[in-house]
Length: 216
Image (cartoon, rainbow, N blue to C red):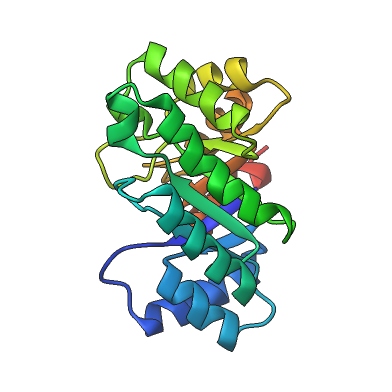
């Protein structure tokens, strides 16, 4: 249910080891890492389900570049890919380019049985744009629509999760990410339709949830 993330540019190999230990201790769905840290982790830790990011966090990548990076990561053993859609192309109304970039990664992932989650960066979009972006992601064949990177000022909201869910229905899943720090926030987003939670504070959320359960 929780994708444990370690994506800060200042992250070290010691941080990676700590994140792996937290992944193991709490049984997270995957550990989301930069391409470099993903490749390191795959060599050192065989028991970890790795998610790597593509075009993160700005979405500045061509379809060909995204496809090539996706293949390198998938061949190394990455199980999931979180990519940022081409935000400039989207804002320019070049939806074909946006879809091409997503589909390029989806096609690479197919032969590896890997999941593709596409970040639409809801904090930069109005509701009409969120609907359009979600439709593009689904039409391109991705498995998840994801709210935010958490790096560009946006945060996951109940409104956005519910809106995306209303668009994708059963055709794709929803990942809420960006500014999720506490168990109550995560539970509210799940109730709104989120299938996954992306956060760097997974351990805190799990511990808070355990306390909530004890208090019932």
